[in-house]
Length: 301
Ligand code: UTP
Image (cartoon, rainbow, N blue to C red; front, side, top):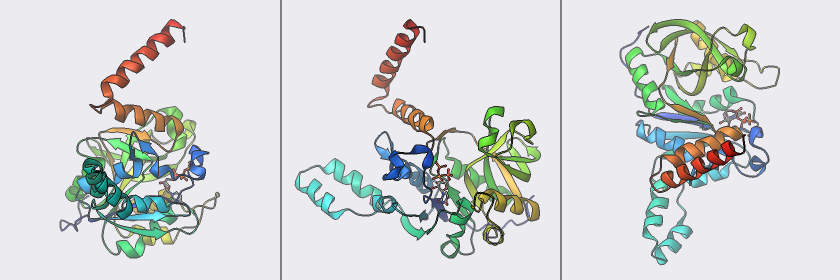
């Protein structure tokens, strides 16, 4: 598996945010889903902090219509800072400023939502000829170390592209890209194929690709050669399948708890889960939840 011991460092992250977020309508009619809160922090900030903690130096947002707020969140807001300063709200001022200085950001416009594969391809000129990570901000994964860091560690060992994998139930396979391959070490697979959203009856496995990837720059050649699928979108899965076939691709079963916040229930459970871990509100929320469960039990629900 290991073809090259001289690794290029992973410095850049691509975060596609140009999708329409139809599963969360109507809120996403005017609010980018990436700015929806995880308690009091926009989801995109949680993902960008994951990049910073993994040693990434530059984040490339693939943006679309109405997504300007994502860039603004990481920019300085002088007017707000001035007012906070004047009012002596120094803690808030520090919080707001620290977001702006988190990391260097670049925005590339995807003029039409032509699919995740097309969104990643939009980053080609900025990424240039180096390996990079892709993070889908719908997927919030809490783990220590972060999944991005885990992928970088696998890459440093094996020198190949890596996708994050998670076992899903039979019922769920039709919502994911599902891999087949050989398991050669605990949690590590040589990926042979990826099937997009298979029927549960004919699924080749139950290992689903989740929204963290570490990709070599050759992925751009594979994506460029792809035709749109029947929905008119260029799928990242098809580019990954070619990479797996013609070069190599490692599947890595990460450890961590994942929430799909692009889905209504996932959005709510992510908020509950993150709030429960916060010392300022966790105990009170737990008390409230216990009360609700007791009430529901009493009602026989
Ligand atoms: P999803 O399909 O999960 O997001 O794409 P979506 O299209 O926004 O959501 P639904 O299914 O309509 O509710 C995964 C990621 O790829 C980005 C999305 O923003 C999301 O982060 N994406 C998708 C793009 O940047 N461009 C696209 O053309 C499609």
